[in-house]
Image (cartoon, rainbow, N blue to C red; front, side, top):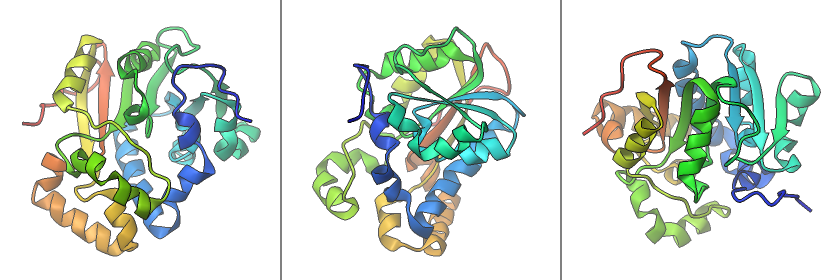
Length: 253
């Protein structure tokens, strides 16, 4: 039995499971994760050897890459079961793991250089307190990902049955109006400085194609035509705290 400690938001228990990881199996899954990894490492390049908190990162999608690039990584999960997929890193003292409430992170203000959270925000109902906590414990920057309403994901609720039939283990998620999200982040005192929409075509379509070569070509064309900038999703967003770092992001039209 999985113990949730009665925390109000525990969506990361599912995203840390082997069942969820199966959605990224095979060559196409590895390609999808590589796109995410390369964008993230590029955003982190300005913070070598930073101390990073990965909230809900028990899925382990970035753990190895962060460790190999010299970052000090702590993963926070809603239950002990959330460390299953990163247990080998924890056992080897290459990564720390802590159980905690994502709406009340068990750390003082500004504890970590960078706080990241992937595959979690779209499944958190109390997203404003969640984001406020990410910002609170970050000293320099916050990086999150999310689907936008200005993408094919916007019609996901109408295609959910079809998507579930194809993927088998999908679940509903929230698509965000970017202007609302950016305004809320600014109210927390952080400045959006980098934005990377990952895919123009839905990830479920890439899984159906099962061809990294074809998917890569389609996405390269879409990006070259500007379609990914306008309609790409999920978006990886980097925000700097206290005015640190590069110039602010120009909000997309």
